[in-house]
Image (cartoon, rainbow, N blue to C red; front, side, top):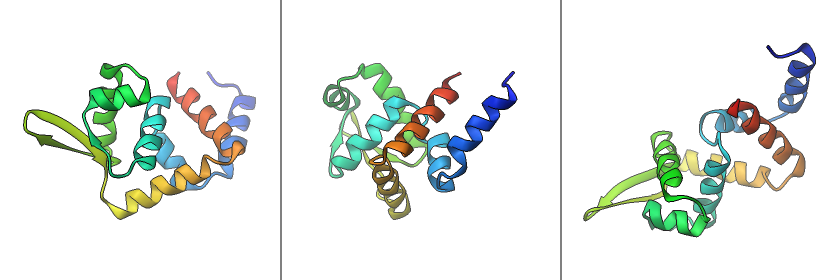
Length: 126
């Protein structure tokens, strides 16, 4: 059970957040690994690579990365295709998704936004 003061804190932390970015956090970038992956692909928009190589670049466990890449693909953030016998991932080509990712990355430059985003992700992990 969440106390009334806990609800007040959540409302204050999320109340002034852009609703599209809040929804993006709730439904697409709902883990720190996904946040790292979105940032990686945003910074490297022409990258098309395997889960194993992305994990190496990100310094993360390949099995964890593979699962998160799949979820980001299912949510339209990334695209997946087969190249021979390899599955490769790249940033979605959908312009609306790319604009939303750009807005998210720009918002992350603001410390207050990052604090709110971190709070939301941790809260969602419970």
